[in-house]
Length: 197
Length: 238
Image 1 (cartoon, each protein chain N blue to C red):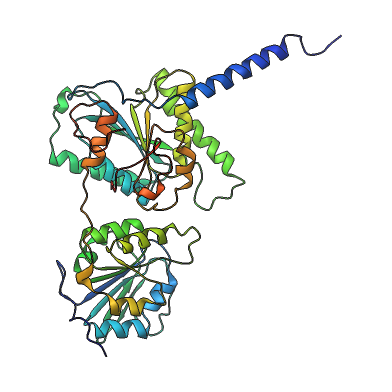
Image 2: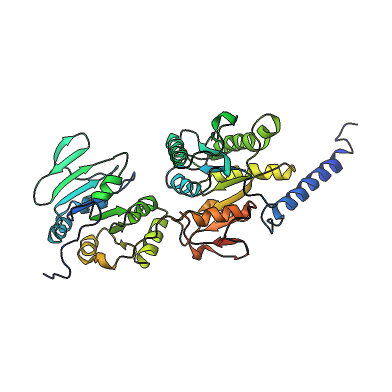
């Protein structure tokens, strides 16, 4: 067994051992089922994670080994405590608590997570017809901001993730758009990196 | 002997000809080589944005949040029927901006609200069969024309000076209504289109349709720039 890097180091706002999985408002059965399967749980344990939350949206998965403790809310105790639920009005707190986030490839989720400087593994959903989502995850992976993976390769992606090599995603800078619009509407006080040619 | 009057065909032909020529002039008019006439720093600029729901709303509001709210006023948020979430997000943004920078004009002096909502029916709902789409699109277009073309002529607020679009199908309907204004020689908003951050290598359908029609066509990934004279990329804006 290789010890290629030390156990995960805590990210801002967290304990160092929490994983959060999200599919947003979509349905992504394959991702949820894989995350709850032994190969993934095994590699998460080995990498030092102790708790796992899964926001499963509209996905279907096997609940037979889980304890249902409320409507649309399941638990599994053990050495990787798991909690599964469908929706919350805001995921901000869950993002902040997490040391690793595994997510569908929605652009809004990606931007929110990367701006919180959290390590992110993105899984484009192959069942979606128009898969421009995969283009975004590939492009950002190519720039080093996140890791992109298939459902099948998820254990390997988790195993091989070296958080120290992730490139921070730029924070929001509204000045570009502001100056572009000011210049277009005739204001003279812009400094205009967006000037028309 | 009955039959079509002799004058009918020539008159019809001339009318169609005039319409086609006018359309040609309007559609191929050079985009203003320079931006609108100079504007003083304290002058206001009326502004509208279409919030298409979901990721489109988030991106659009992100862009709007960058603007000086004392400069771009009044603001009109155009939303699709039933999209209360987008309305809520816009209200949240307005509250946040009001809290961080107090208005330069006290409310006692102000007769018009700083921002309003305009609701138009969706051109097409998700998964709606294409067979019924022409009918819903027509309703959507009628509403757009009412707000952009007819309303300002009769009683309503004046046409906004700029309209920000970022992708979803109903954008096209707003663009058509804007062109109706141009065709009739009425004031029309500048059309600014910003393709979604999620579009890296291929434009959305709305992007492809609107690219030749809008005044500024802006993408966020360089690979989408096909014609440098028309397409712009200034990096990530959201």
